[in-house]
Each structure stands twice: as structure tokens, then as C-alpha cells.
Picture (tube, rainbow, N blue to C red):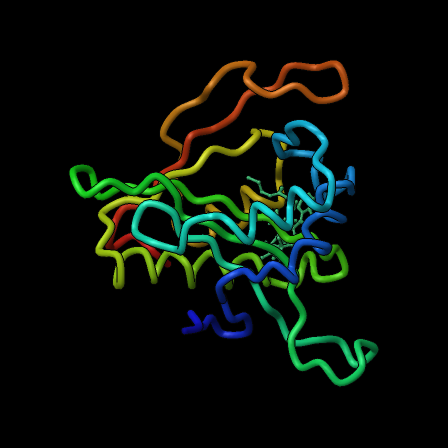
Length: 182
Ligand SMILES: CC(C)(COP(=O)(O)OP(=O)(O)OC[C@H]1O[C@@H](n2cnc3c(N)ncnc32)[C@H](O)[C@@H]1OP(=O)(O)O)[C@@H](O)C(=O)NCCC(=O)NCCS
């Protein structure tokens, strides 16, 4: 099953996607505003994809496919990033959203906006969520533009929870209620 946006399609991740993820996780520009964690070998990333439980209410991970560039040969689609809804609980109807695009030549063309809209629509319609929440570093202007455009609003500020280049930075908590998706 695909979840379709206007230009992207969201699909289950495959073990064969491990190499792309591994490269993205080693790209300082991609990881600039993300919690990088500790370095993982490629085999670990592949094992994680092979062994993670199937997508279900509490954790849905999608690969974001976009139309491949003509230079990509015969492939029609190119994996450009990931989007995830995790931690959903029936009692609260709330899940957390995470997104990143690892293929930088696809940045700034509306793909993240399309993918966030598609996954939020899926969350509200198919999963019957009431709310989708996220946190974002207050300096991450591109991500803030995406989230605000689709209807997320700032709900709070977590002080000095992210460290980058020797500085402590704040994060916003943001939320989108059922019916607020734009
Ligand atoms: C943040 C991210 C998801 C945005 O993806 P995208 O496909 O480029 O987003 P969109 O094109 O839909 O919209 C981004 C907007 O920010 C703008 N933008 C891009 N880089 C920017 C920057 N450094 N400063 C300000 N605005 C920027 C784009 O021009 C676009 O402007 P618009 O609102 O006029 O269209 C992507 O850059 C990314 O994955 N970054 C690395 C990981 C990350 O930060 N993830 C989010 C963690 S909360």
C-alpha cells in the first residue's frame, strides 16, 4: 500500500534502503538540526530495517519516494527521505511526527510539505488520531516553514535541549489537531 501525496508516495522501508540511510546519517548538512546519536555501522542499519516490527498503530515508518531525476537511469522513483508517526496511544489519540529528507538536491521544492501533509492526512483518517505533535530546533527555519504551512502551531518552548557547534539551543513543541490540517 502506498500513501499518496500530490508528488510523493510514502511506502514501507526495505532492508535495501539501508545504504541510503547510512549515507544520510553521515551527512553533516542533513543531520545539522537532528539528534545524531552514536555512529552505527551499515550492517546495524540494515539489521534494524530487517528486524524492526511491522508498521502498526504505535510506530509507522515510511520511506518518501519522489519522481526520479532523468539522470537516475530507468528508475521511476527515488527514495529521498523518511517520515514517521510514533508513540500513538489510543487513550490520547496523539502521535509524534519526525521527518527528514536525506537527498539534498530535492530540498526547497515542496517535497517535505507534500510528505508531511500526506502523513498527517493518513494519521487523521486511517489511524483516527486526534493530534500530531513534534519538536523542532527553533533555528531550523526550513522545517518551521513546512510545519507552519500545513497548520502546526507552537505550543511551548523547551529551553537548551539541543547542542550544536558549542551552543545550547531551544526547541519548540508544535501540535496539529484533527481538522487543522491545511
Ligand atoms: C527541513 C526539511 C524537511 C525541509 O524539506 P523541503 O522539502 O526543503 O521543504 P519545503 O520545500 O516543503 O519547504 C521548505 C521552505 O523553507 C525554505 N528554506 C530552505 N532552506 C532554508 C533555510 N536554510 N532558511 C530558511 N528557509 C529555508 C525553502 O525555500 C522553502 O520555502 P517556501 O516556504 O517559500 O516554499 C529538509 O530540509 C530536511 O530534511 N532537512 C534536514 C533534516 C531536518 O531538519 N528535519 C526536520 C527536523 S525537525
